[in-house]
Length: 291
Image (cartoon, rainbow, N blue to C red):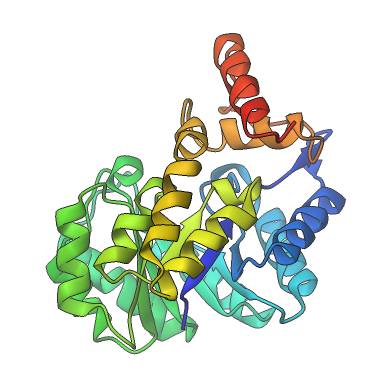
C-alpha cells in the first residue's frame, strides 16, 4: 500500500507563521520529480512546535495540494494516546491516506504499552497506521516482537524503521514484511541496504532538495536494477550525510533557504546552524550544483 519514496516535508515559516505559499511550492516540486507521497507534520516538519491549529492546517494543505496525485501519510504521533487519536481522526476527515505515528516519547512506555497505544489509535481513528520506530528521538525501541504483534492488527499497515540496526530491520522484514505490511526506511542512507533486504521504500529528508535522485534509487531497486541503485546510493551519500550535520531539520531547512525555496526560519528551541556547518553545507550544495 505504501511503497516508494515519501518526502518528510519541512514546514516553512515566514515572520513566525506557516508559509503556506512556500509549502505548496515544495509539494509541487516533489510531485513534478515523481515522489510517491508526502509526510507533513513529522520530525522534519517541526511538529513539536506546531499548534494543533497549525498542525491540522498543514495536513489539510498537503492533502488539497496533492489532489490525489500521490499519497499523504500525516504525522499524528504523540506521547498522549488521546491526542494521537484526535490528530489521526482529523487527518482522516480531511482525506489523508494514512497516519505515521512516532513511538510515544518521554514517558517511556513498556512494549505492552506501545502495543496498546498503536492498537487503540488504529481502532479509534480507523485510518491505516504506520508505526515509526526511532529510539534516538523517543528513548524507547519498538522491539521486533511488538511490531509482529501490531502487524496482525487491522489498520496497522507498516513501519518506518529508523532503529539504526540493520539486524533489527532484517528481522522485522523477515517476520512481518510482506504484501500486507510495508517496511520503509527512516534514514536516507539506509534506503539501499533496507530495500536489498526486502524493504518497500523510504520516508526521506533529502528528497526535500533532490526528490528526483532518491526516487530514481527506489525505482531502480523496485525494478531489480541493483547496480543502478547502488550507483545512486553512493552518488548522493555525502549529501544525505550532510542533512544531519546538526539536528534535523536544521540542515535541510538551511539547504532549502540557500536554494531560495524557503525562508531560513526555525522555531525555538531549534535555531539556525552554526557558521562552520553553514560553510560546510554550502560547499556540499555547490558540489552537487544545487546552488
